[in-house]
Image (cartoon, rainbow, N blue to C red; front, side, top):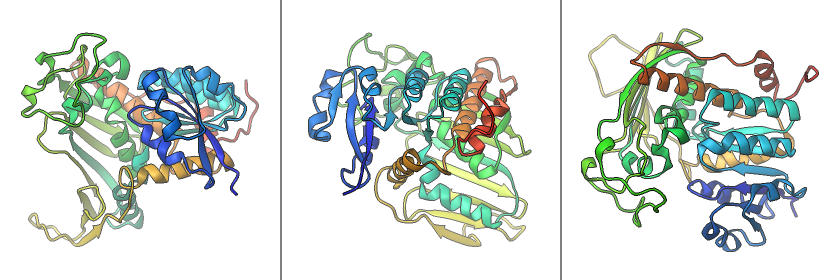
Length: 396
């Protein structure tokens, strides 16, 4: 019989599937308690996680000495308060991306982890997606030489429903979608390019969803939310009562290693598509889809006109589960880390840097596209996390 890691879950909403993945009684981890402010959600806990406590307040969960680790799966603007409280309670913390909606909030979370010694893990699950790991392996082998530029196009066909019919549309809750939605992609850009954004500028606008019909405050999302979708985008209705984030945006980045990168996001496209292009000193790679069986193509001979018959074609490996198997793998990594510590493929510092890039890009697009420097991280914190969350100096 395995001595299960006992997990508490704060917030069982849209990312509650991660709690389901973590619940493996007798196989290493078990959801032992759930805190949520919605009585209807708490009423489902007994069926979803037999034997788990269901509580309305997160403090009750954090005060339970029988809880080893906590999943914080709540809206973005609550992450700072809840993560810091869990770290101060001595729990290992899984924090759903993005880390927070401000650079200052991210830095407080990192500082709290440093001062308490509690383990912190930020769930950038795209680092565990097959397509991303495949692209990183190709780059690491040197198949395209040294990466010099990265381009990302992200068409979010369901954006009007996922992001403009609930709290994501309110910049007070997210800062903006160049942070909330792009945090994953910015982290992947950093991971593939081997550096962090140092300088950024951006343009964007609320082009389609700014004038569409909205719900009154304190009214529920439409009954068919995320099951029924209007088309064309101008026919969408029942939007959140506050809509003040951009539905289209573009940003340019210079990384600290000299790499130039660009990211584009649109929330009224007819199709969903996430496309990466990485060009190095000896070739180019591009993904054609991101699901198992899709392709990453490499061109590393030339020069030539465009040719669809790439020099090498790599298939995205098979996987099961959410996000191409990434949800399962990221939860396995977190549970191992919470129990034993050690190296992880995700990084709290990298999570902070993707938020910082998104924050400064959002500031840029709202101030006419001016370029801004990304605030640096306290070197003590950078060193602590680079050392596997082990301190080599006294806390001051």
